[in-house]
Length: 195
Image (cartoon, rainbow, N blue to C red; front, side, top):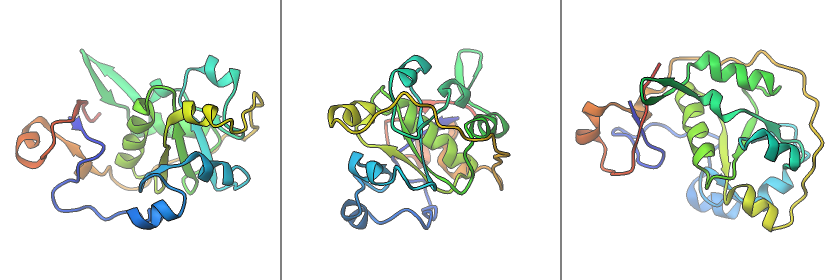
């Protein structure tokens, strides 16, 4: 399977109700519809429904992270088979989220220190399996740190949850090699396969 993070699938898929229009997003503190600003996230640090998920290496998380952020091992979003990186099974990703103590109704703000490569891969994976509201921190950890936003070494204490995805995977955002040339008007794709 191929995946893409910015091109629309043929036959526009409905947007999640919580995702604002681009104009409303910019007024509401978002850098775009799915990318939040450092200011927006800082304003949500005490909102229990918004959870930052740190996808950097554990050592980087331990050295300092967004207050309240849960560390999630980015490798859990992948499954290696042959020489191709596959999308992990829904149960594997749900297990990561359950261990982090987050809930399906939470808004996730994903960040990394790799130019959002890990964060957008995780965002896409969550979209495929049906998490209702996930966002990416615009500018990654680097922008948070450069703006001198609060950071901590304290690890939040959240009890493990029974996180589970509901419904069938959203295959409209997964493009097979056969569909690539006929349905995708974009040259920016990465190779992956559904489990």
